[in-house]
Amino acid sequence: MTFETLGLTAQLLRAVAEEGYTAATPIQEQAIPPILQGNDIFASAQTGTGKTAGFTLPLLQRLSSNPPTKTQRAPRALILTPTRELAAQVNNSVNTYGKYLPIKSVVVFGGVGIVRQIKALKQGSDIVVATPGRLLDHVSQHTIDLSQIETLVLDECDRMLDMGFIHDIRKVLAQLPASRQTLMFSATFSKAIRKLASTLLDNPVQIEVAPRNTAAEQVEQLVYPVDRTRKRELLSYLIGFNNWQQVLVFTRTKHGANRLAEQLAKDGLKTAAIHGNKSQAARTRALRDFKQSKVRVLVATDVASRGLDIDQLPHVVNFELPNVPEDYVHRIGRTGRAGNEGQAISLVSSDEQSLLKRIEKLLKRKLTQSVLPGYEPTAAPHQGEPPKRQRSKSRRRNYNSSNPQARPAQGKKSPTGNHRKRLRKA
Image 1: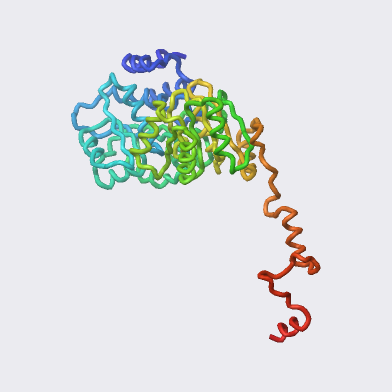
Image 2: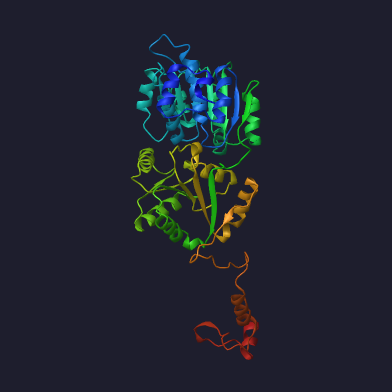
């Protein structure tokens, strides 16, 4: 289906065409018409399927059809996102698609100074894109008026729940008019999300483009079993041997991301790290350099697994598997976006087999495994047991007094005979 058949205005169609898009994605086909009609939406779709345009285009049209008359104006639409990067990305989409409309937007998130944001809000806006924490900062300082909100968008709302934002979201909801349009977009339909939707939405149109928790079909997924101590060596080999020029690598911890980035840099690979301990300026710079191919490898924690929109990213590597199986889906969703092919590699050590099984259970299929010659994993002992050879030596030392090696340390004689009697008396 083309965008012309969805009822969008000429200004929006012009902006979409200039971005090189002609055919709408399934989520856009199903979401745009009911949003234009003013319905609440409860939508789930795979990452990289065009969810952002699915709500920004009709939102822009609804706002522009009833433009404000005042220069100073309170926002009429609020878009909440879980991360700073996603907030910035959504705001960019609003500006891109709305460049031929008299619509103003402001983005507010933490990690940067609040003064500039206050100034932008005072100048008036139609749309505010925000993370929950910083938005509540503005609410507490009375620098934003949410009483005129007509449409609320919760983007990646499952991620917001995972990150513990439910209380912040409820505080924000208390500031909004009860009569409004609410749009919930999520990568998954968990029980918690369904429960939240039942309290927020009024007779919503439910859209589920892809089966629950499925990874993008165009992403090739491959597992390399390898010892934990040789993961970095194998990763450097894969990047160099295959001449990968743009690789997003995921670790579980911030410290691990920094350490891996330093090691890869020593291997001669231009690398940057992005995680929650980095300043917003550093995160923005690292992401910009990666998109512009100034950085070859971007090492990230799961703060980057949602909302990173990188055109035609060819390779994602799970240096460590995530503890939550659903995060695997979001990680590999950074590649294979908008119909492009992608490859997701997971380096799996023996202690991660249980995590791999949970991921495969979620995906309802086994992932292809390949052992690279020279990187074969060593056999691991049963968990909680020392190797048999060590156990037998220990047993001989402790219980076999005839063993000449079973001698006390520092050459002292063992208490035998009369020595034992004196010790018992003592």
